Length: 214
Image (cartoon, rainbow, N blue to C red; front, side):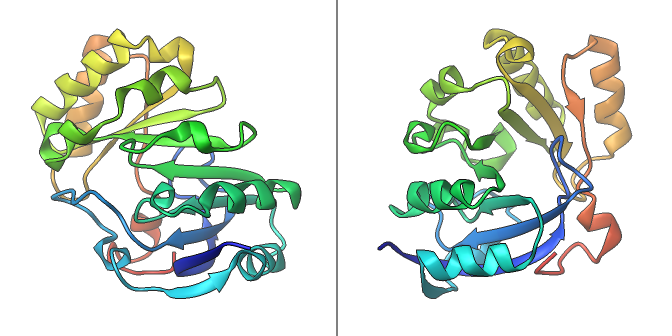
């Protein structure tokens, strides 16, 4: 049975994606091969405890909600993650997997809903993107772009158009907290009639932006 290094398991509302606002059980796994300049979960790079897959599933099911997200760090950096995702699905949950896009999403159970974060230039990690992942997306998957400026917006717009994301999956555009005024991004999107959904991180408006476990 896989042993996973887990940074935290908690119940909150889903703060992003088309699932925003719903109660969600989160499993944040430890470790990430990327080092984004504006990362808001750097505490998950190393810190965590080792738990069996069954213990993680038990804790998630004990919350009694129907939605779960496996995130990080980078969840696909741990070999046991695909089995964890499948076990949560077998437990009757809708499972979201948020990934930074640098590792192969093809290892995941096809019932899972991938939220793939395409790293824009301001992150410093855009060169680590595994582009074949975009061809593996299904209509129930989502692609997220976090922007810190106009260059990031133009980059996201190009990817959305080049990969025809409006037909392949759902495109989400958000801002790196405190880096750019959300209104500016919305105005750009409206000017271009960009086929994407703008989103804010709800949890950072409900609780302090640096609060953990929410």
